[in-house]
Length: 149
Image (cartoon, rainbow, N blue to C red; front, side, top):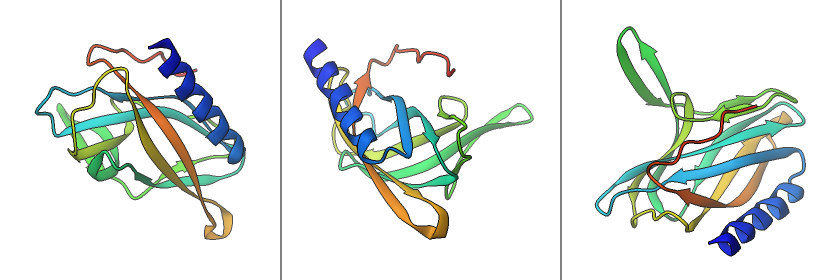
């Protein structure tokens, strides 16, 4: 288990250095029950220059969307958004209760301890696109993420 986690962290570090302008901290995916068809992915993003997260891909899901959860009165609402702005130098949390990555039509159960390949697509000045390849660890259903800094 520790070896898998270390390997995932190393892959993340290698990917982050390849696109040094954007950093990803503490990425994780919530595990699912065997028949589960959807889950969320969470992380903290920070860009050295203004950018946008515009797309997320993973072979583990048939549909991957960037979502925002918000309260409207006493109702919790969740909806897809086209992008998430990443203001230069400011961390942006993708966390429960706010922005997150929604993985739907899962191809298999997400089991705690495994890693899932994920590609983040960013748009920078001049509509230039860059991708960042990650291996995201799956955390147990009971996992509580650390509070963003």
